[in-house]
Length: 103
Figure 1 (cartoon, one colour):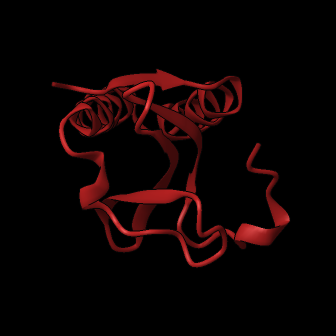
Figure 2 (spheres, rainbow, N blue to C red):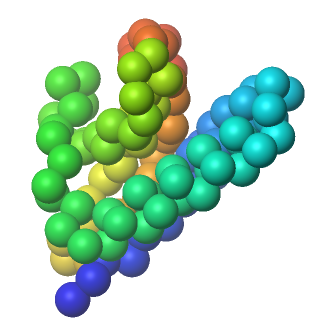
């Protein structure tokens, strides 16, 4: 049985900001990036435990998306009882995690 994947408000804002940043440089690249990332996030509906626990927050996991130097971290929480995956935040891997508010 699959998990339900939900974007939390912070993650929605993050995705919009990243999309706009990439789009300012290349509209086609932004759309391609967004589609690939959306597919990766949707893939969390099946066995979301396959990605590692974050070193900063032991209750959270992260999906690493992209290629160096453009790797993004998708931070998420799994609720096994509700069979849901909440996407909490998305940020560039070079950002300092403790300067960001997760929840």
